[in-house]
Image (cartoon, rainbow, N blue to C red; front, side, top):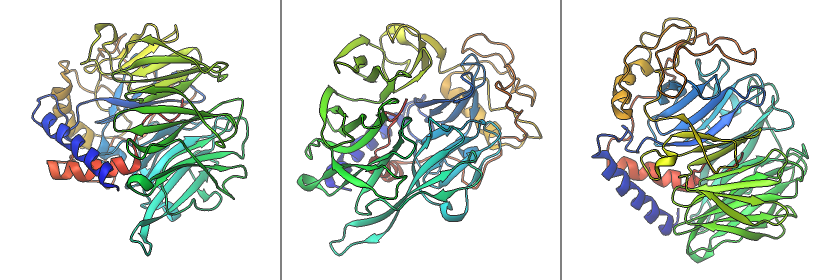
Length: 463
C-alpha cells in the first residue's frame, strides 16, 4: 500500500474510533449502514442487502426483513464488506477475506468452498446476466515480493456453472504485479470479461482495466484515466447490457470520484461525471439510462445517447440497484433531507421520490430456519443489535418456517414463504468457523481499514 493510501486508512480509522464512543455504533466500530443490494435473477421478491452488521434478507420484495449475522456467514473477525450475488436457484455467494462462502438454502446453512478456492481471499463475485446459474469469482492472494520488494499476487478467476456446487479455474491469472479490484462480465458477449487493478505508489501509480475476449485465456491491459495525487483505485462499475465494448469505470479518490466511460473496451475514455464520492451505480435493463450518486452528492441520472447527467434528488446514496422498472437506493436515515429517511428505498419515477422499504429499526430478528437454532450465534447476538438499531419490538423470531415478529419495515405481520419455488431453509443460523465479535480497538481498525483500502471496497460496481 502506498503512503497516501495508508494515510487515508488512518483517517478512516480515526473516524471509526470516534464512532466507537457513540451508543449507536456497531461492535466493529462502524455506524450501521447498507452498501450493496442484490436481487435474485429469477425471483424479484428475493432481496439480499449487505450491511455493516451482516446480511439482511427479504422474500416479499422488501416488506419484511430478517438478519443473518456475520459469524453465521463466516466472517466478523475482520472489518469487511463481502461482495455478494444470488444465482438462478437462490444460492447466495459471498466473497470474504477468509474464503468463498456459499448458502444453497436462502441464507441458512453456510460453508466455505474448498479445493483450489480453500481460504483464498475473494475480491469480487458476479453472476452471468445471460446465464444466471453461472457465477464467477475473482480470487487474489499475495504470494511474495519481487526483487524490488513490491508485492506479487496470484489473481485468478474461478467459475461455477451449477449454482456454486463445483468450481473450476477460468483462463489464466491476471498480471501478478497488480492489486485487483473488480470483475465484470458482459451480458451480450458470453466470452467477454473485465477486471480492474492498480499497481505502484505515489507518482508512479498505474490504474488498469484488463480485458479478455476469450474467457480469461488472455488479459489485455488498458490504461484508465488516473490522477496519482488524488486517485487510489479503479473499479469497473458496469458493462452496457447490449454492447460489450461499452464499459463504465469509477476511480476512487481522496477528494473526488470520477465516472469514466469507454465505447471501445477501454482503448479510450471520456469522463462524463465527477462527484465528491460515488458509491452507487446502476443501469436500466436496456442500458439507455445510467444512475450514479453518493452520500453527499445525491442521485444523478444520465442518458446513454448524450452522456449528460442531471441531478434527480438529494437522496444520500450508499448503493444503487435497478430491477425492472424499480430503482433501489441504500441510504442513511440519520442524514438529511427528511424526505429520504430510510436504509433502503424504492423509486418508480427515476429516483425523484422514494418509498422506504427498510428503516434501521425494521428488522424482525435473526433469519428463522428449520431445525433447532436455539444456540445460534445470531440469536445470541440479537439483543445487542436490537439495542444498537433501536428495535423495541421483542416478539421473538417466530416459527422456523420463515415467520417472525411484526416488522416496522412496512406491511408488518408474518413473512410470506419464499417465492419463486425456492425451498424452505433447512437449518438454523449456526456459525461457520469464525470467531464472534468485531475489531475492538483503533489498532485493529487501522489494520482492517488498510486492507479495505487495498481492496478498494465499494458497492459502486454493478446494477
